[in-house]
Image (cartoon, rainbow, N blue to C red; front, side):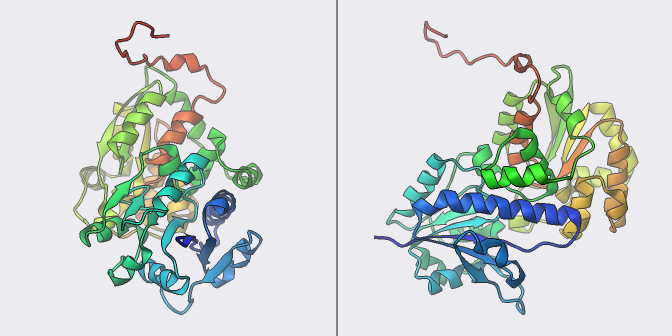
Amino acid sequence: MKRIVAAIFHAPMGTTEPERFVEGGRVASTEDLIRDLRPSVDDILVVTGQDRAESFRRSDVEVVQSEPERPFHFGITLKQLVRDYDIDSLLYFGSGSGGLLSSGSIGTLSAFAERDERGALFNNFYSCDFAVFTSASSLLALALPELDNGIGFALADAGIPCFALARTVETEFDIDTPIDLLLLRASGKGGASLKRFLQEGRIEHPTLSALCERLCDRSALIHLSGRINPTTWGAFERQVACRTTGVVEGRGMRATGDSRQLLLQRILREDGPTAFFQRAAETADAAVIDTRPLLATHGRLPPASDRFASDLFLVDAIRDPDWQAFTTAAADAPIPVLLGGHSLVSGGLYLLGEACWKGRDLGRRLHPEPFTGGDDQS
């Protein structure tokens, strides 16, 4: 019998209220994931900092504490687990990912883990949130990346067969920013622990409700921009009543290290944030923007405290002047704007497409059913 182990990596976050909100959501999501995974694996490990160990002990898992004196390195830590715990197949999750997986999807991961052949199965090959590695010992000879985003490229370059799950809200959703949790709450999704956490949360968003109204309006035009997969965009269009427009750029930049300037980034820097959002209002009725590639400076981002404050339009809490100016312009824009990271324009788009119809007339969706050519189309 193969020894199959699940390892959930949880990175501690800062002390601002939005950061505590995100970390609390990840812990709650991990509790749900642990409960769902338990029948399918031999052991479950949670890798986290020493000061976060108590958050997971009630889940009856083994907590592996990262070494505080050394900077965290994903690849080194992954290989250390394989060696120390004699793992044949490894299910890896970043905390906050996998929380929406159904029992059938977990069964798919487990079946892949039972394979004798060497291989890897990713939720997203280009930016990994969770994955399954068979013949885990084969990872020991490889140079694995510092962050999990690029592990798909590392394994493919080493000749390991790589596969990807179909893009759905289950596989794409990841708790990475406060807006991800607010979308979960608006859509009513999540496990028991996560739903309980969200019901107790006090954080709100000033434009989410107005943006959802636009999504249900057939006459509205919504601008989307950022690291959007075409499959995800297509699924979003089938969910909402509005029309969509926008720009796809920045995909794979973090995994590949591509630092070339983006088209919208150049326009923003030439026009300034106020004119940027004025142009957006002239061409669309609302905007959903992945800000990370747009506002990155030579590939670098400000701390999570600034990014999360920007997502929630907490302008006075932002220290980076560029992010503060951009967020101020977004808050003052004549159209509702939703800001976030990659998760907003991946799993978040699926949730937006569901949340916008809560309490509204589903008949307004009015997308025709595909014709299959049969006589009975009932």
